[in-house]
Image 1: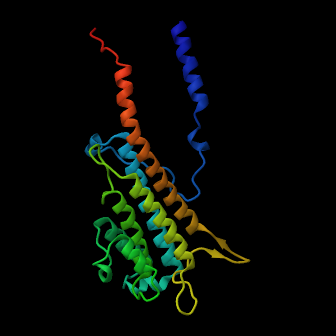
Image 2 (image 1 turned 90 degrees about the horizontal axis):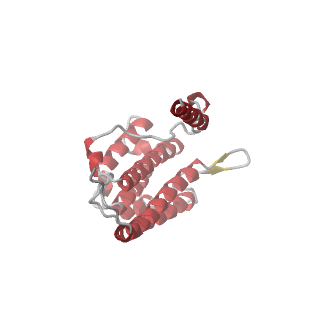
Image 3 (image 1 turned 45 degrees about the vertical axis):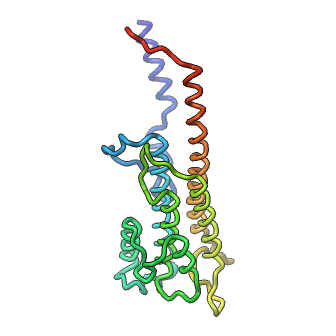
Length: 242
């Protein structure tokens, strides 16, 4: 009887700490936390590998959101690529990023080189496509050219940190770089007496925050390997035999 009462108390306590599904607050942007179905390759991933993989996945998602926003504000850019619509242009860009194929007019360039060209006033191609592709290639390059990570993978926190700084620089250049007539190369954030649209800034901030977090975790992860080994020696426990 005492055991039953204890179980009922635990259930009531747990229930009191849970939020009913109907009372959960929906994310403003409609995306919210996302997971993925179990797959065989996850057996080769540590918790930290999953964290890095999810952070990179979300950074790429943010870039696709930025691409759509840039095309909305700068429709002339997706017209340059010959796409049938803005959505089609975003889909092609996503496919290029996932396959590692740069824009055809920039085929000989990579990561920060493409970024630099995308914000060059002399560039005549699809500037939005080049800008987002350059950002994606920069971030992926900092992660050893991978988008999923496993126990054998070793990442350099310094390179991920540098990628975050490159995103910061790119965001600033996007907001300030102008052509010979004094016009912004690409319209992004909008500030006026009637309108304040800082959605680009927020998305860039999310990307930079994730990159900085992973860079810090990479440094901590390397340090903890040695500490955990030392703790294992000091706190050795015999294994049960019955």
